[in-house]
Image (cartoon, rainbow, N blue to C red; front, side, top):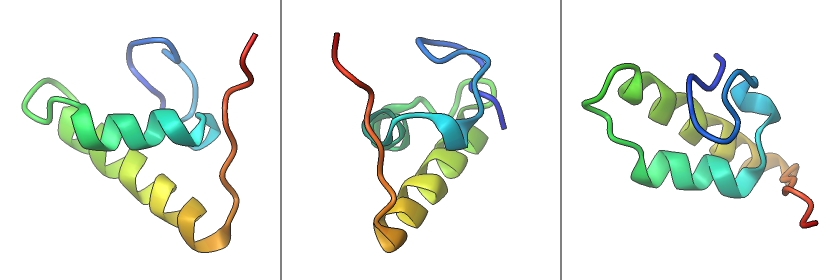
Length: 61
């Protein structure tokens, strides 16, 4: 699934930084458009990274 809007619009959810995935899973409006599916995908990817220790984070400028 691709992120439909925001800072990472058009990017695959599994390529997004872990911190952003966590934020999406906790804060995204599930009642808006694809919100529920995006929250689910973001949470599943974040939980997978938690289990496997494969987190990655956005590099700061």
